[in-house]
Image 1 (cartoon, protein in one colour):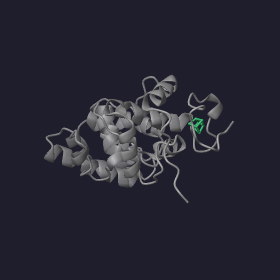
Image 2 (cartoon, protein in one colour):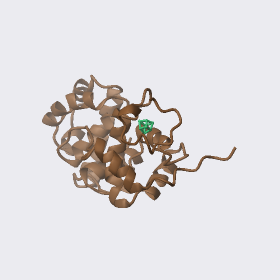
Image 3 (cartoon, protein in one colour):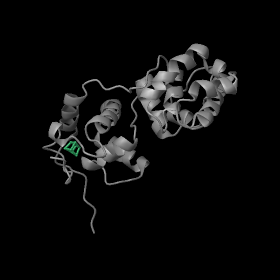
Image 4 (spheres, helix red, strand yellow):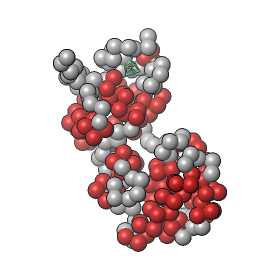
Length: 216
Ligand code: SF4
């Protein structure tokens, strides 16, 4: 069977304008005050909620405010602080190692390129893109589980592979909108176009959305 082509009728401008009605100024919901803190909280947020990470991160950064400090933290102490989140042992070891690499190889500064960021343990393209967009205000496309689902429903991609979806979105949206789209689609997927029971009745894109199982 021939694959359905992504919708060509609705343009970028229209989608961005409609999304802005939901999220005029979207940002990651993780709390951070510098690129290193963002890097750490994004790594900690895998398989757990942003809310939980935001609850434990102030204590973590109060005790260990720099990459070097985290790299030298007693691992038992990190376990204790991170205990409320999933996979805390592995994550404690990971942020300690990331702290060491940032301190030793990058002079204590988080690199602002995707190629360097993905060299860090536990940092894939998604995490790297979140950091580029939110810490450095650089154009990048974040493809997480929400963005995968929403892009498909909106007809912006037919692909399942995150890298291919990233390419589809990068082709559809102009670079000046990448950062906006990344944060907006994550929040749109989290709060409106949810996996189960999408809020189609409240959705500002309902009349342009080609998804055939709308929740009306
Ligand atoms: S109409 Fe429904 S399925 Fe389509 S984008 Fe909006 S919430 Fe998602």
